[in-house]
Amino acid sequence: MRLSKFILTNLEAILQEWEDFAKTIHATIHRMTARELRDHAEAMLKAVAADLDTDQARQEGIDKSQGLAPQVPEDTAAEIHAVDRLSSGFTIEQLASEYRALRASVLRLWQDDIKTITAGEIKDMVRFNEAIDQSLAESVARYSAMHRDSQNLFLAILGHDVRSPLGAISVGAQMLTGNANLTPNAVKTASLIVDSSNRVAEIVSDLLDFSTSHLGDGIPVATSSMDFSSVCTTIVEEMRLFHPDRSIKLEIAGDMEVIWDRSRISQAFGNLIANAIDHGSPEEPIVVTVREHNDDEIIWTIQNAGEVISSAQLRTIFDPAKRFALRPASERKLSDKINLGLGLYITREIIVAHGGRIEITSTKEDGTTFTIRLPRTGNSKNASKR
Image (cartoon, rainbow, N blue to C red; front, side):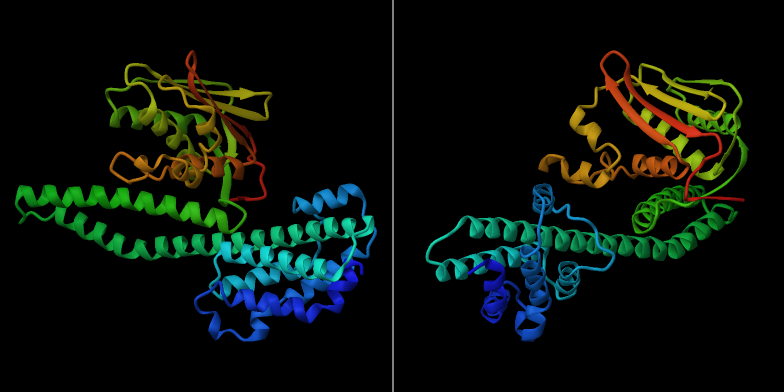
């Protein structure tokens, strides 16, 4: 019997095995009905059977085995299954194990039914595995996306809720610094509270940018005409004031009239210089160049001497989550010397939101160099004009 016919003929037996397995992999499974346990398995199996009866080119089969089947406008049964399993509390490992069990159940029952195997049945088995791989890929992709969105939404809500009490602390501390009845030590303490509150506010702002950029189309920007040279000069002067022991050279050449988001571009520019100060050699200067290129593009480079960044580290330099996960276990403990490193991620998102791109190179001879290329008009789907 061909596999497609076998699946349809023995649908109930296959679904019962699916249900029995599902009962073993989740602690709260006893509260789910048989229909919930089976949820979209029947639709997936019928889709697989129909696929087996459909002519398929060799490349189509390879694509399916890699989870690269053509996209369809409506949610597939596998995608809907992932949503239901996530809402039921299944982990992604448990979700994947269901597909492993389904594959094994179908092939085992089919093997018991057939006496000899033909070339056509071998082809059916290969096609069946390709279809299961595609369904698994769809389920895992949907589960991962929804789980990631829920985490980012939680961070966004947390950051938003922290702002109000933090603002109250900052305002109260500022009022205390102007109170003539307080002792000098009390005024100094209040001043430290203000500084700490401002620092926490910056961290919360970065956290909100990180989370909201994952929930939508990136960081939104509101562009308007501005003189980028004045922004560069102001930020570099501020950095020199805060770090008098560091040498920062600034070179500007060409017309710097642009249409960008002043606040966001200032944030990105400042982040890159701060990064060079944090990680560059204290004995060597930080060199910042900003120049016009072909009338319609502005190029910045921020270069610092220091330890060479490995190619493996360069691949995750703009992804704080992956960078943290890839650290050795001994370095994952957070301390005052290790932060989450959201600055470079946010910088890249700001650059991309303006229609630009950012690259990094790191060599022993030239040090570490960030190169940013931005269109003068900040073209991007995320940009709105003021």
